[in-house]
Every structure is written in structure tokens, then in C-alpha cells.
Length: 160
Image 1 (cartoon, one colour):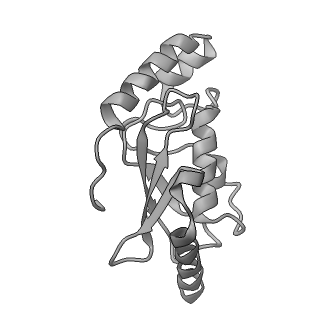
Image 2: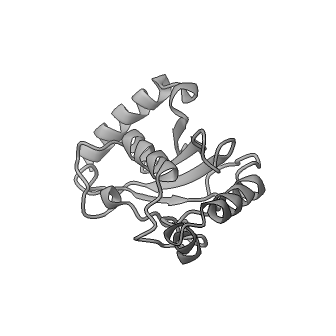
Image 3: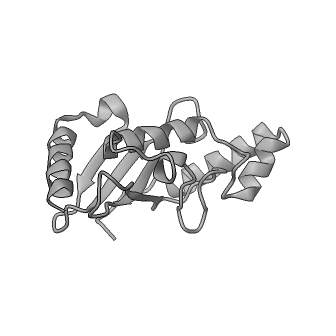
């Protein structure tokens, strides 16, 4: 646990220096628990998520960085690799491709990349995956944009 705490303190110092304007990522630990974080991701440009602010809940295990954090969306999003109800994210680095070289910030960068390049062949949201697999890009983009406007435009409040 000491190793995890040291690593998280280092990542916290780096997060304080980072400018959200540059990366689209804001990382904030809980005031009372260094193992509970919140991230806000700005929707990537030229995607249906542009202009939205998406909140992630990050729970870090005591074995971090040897084990990956648990990351889920708190903000509802229409995306094939994100479960609409639970916010679970289907991303290999959060499961079997984890490496201690990854940081919380780099995990958020990977989630942003997934928002820009969905993988419809391994969907958690079958409706979104099917739209993309069958070539209905317009339908997917319309629904994703509607969800962004409905759920990712509100002001984000404190930790759950």
C-alpha cells in the first residue's frame, strides 16, 4: 500500500501541474481518500461528444500500479464500448493489457482515444455497436450527440 500511496501522490502532483485546456483531462482525488479519484474528460473534437464534459469515477486498488484501477463513466454516454447503465468501459488496458507504466492520466488519454475511435466488434452497448457494424454512422452520431446534449452538458458536482 505504501508503494501505491507514493505513486498516487506523485500522480497528484503531476495532475496539479497539468492544464486541462491542453489535454481535455482534469484529474482530482477525493479529499478524504487518495484511492478514489474523479476525472472530467472534455469530449474530443470532431466527434458527437464534442462540447460535452464526461465524468469518470476511478477507484484505485491497494496493489496499484501492479493492478489496474477500476474506471467507469458517471456521465451517461452512447458508445459501443461503454455500458449505458453501469458506465463500465471495455478497454483492454483496464483488464488483461494493464502495465504498471500506465498512469491515471494515461488511462484517461486512452479513454479519450476510445471515444474518438469506437470498437463496435466488442460492444457493451449492443445498440451502438450494431449501428456502427451495419454502417449507420449517421444514426450512431445522432444518438451519441443527443446523449451528449442531454447528459454531458450539466454541471458536475462532488464525489459520489
